[in-house]
Image 1 (cartoon, rainbow, N blue to C red):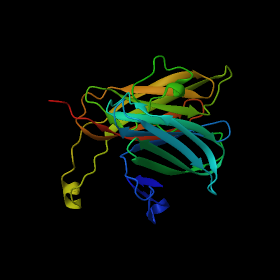
Image 2 (cartoon, rainbow, N blue to C red):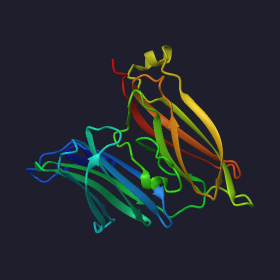
Image 3 (tube, rainbow, N blue to C red):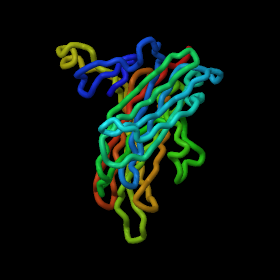
Image 4 (tube, rainbow, N blue to C red):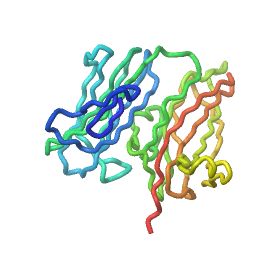
Length: 274
């Protein structure tokens, strides 16, 4: 399901239903759902952000239901200030899920009785022994140091907004890299940041007057790794990009097996303050 403020659409947009009980006022909320591999299924990350300050009393709840509506997990915690945007309060949760079909929900409630809701449908399949990439998650900077427990310190950029003077930072995981005889893997990753602005002109204008946008930003790196799992942060300087919407595209190539995997995430670049 997709959150539409105080409404939720069913899969495929076939229906729209109230997300809140009668009489409950909606609270604006942004959400992020991302998947990472686990031993027997997936590790699901759910995060929400809502306007507020450190003095506000708000509690966020994370709930997972299975295919017949049974509760698989439920967790709650107080929100905290976002490292990306001080005017946002956030909460994030993670849980491991075996193969199956799930509904994942996030709720935030404030002291005035307002509530924000976000939901998504999740299909978890069995692990596959091939090169794969997790979801690409934008972050509020890079932990220091970004080591083996990188995800434990993950600060997701729920609103996917990058300030005018900030680099673009992101996190992803690479699974099932081929191993050499010494137990090490070798891979190459390439990132490209390109405009994601929609061209709203008519077809004639698009064909005979191609829109000229900002040049893409790209880089390629080769790395050597111990084992077949790599946890990777990237920090990309985007000072030269004007305000607008952009897409970060990541391609990983296993230099031993030749396999490739891809991922992407969209974000908004803030305007430079006058």
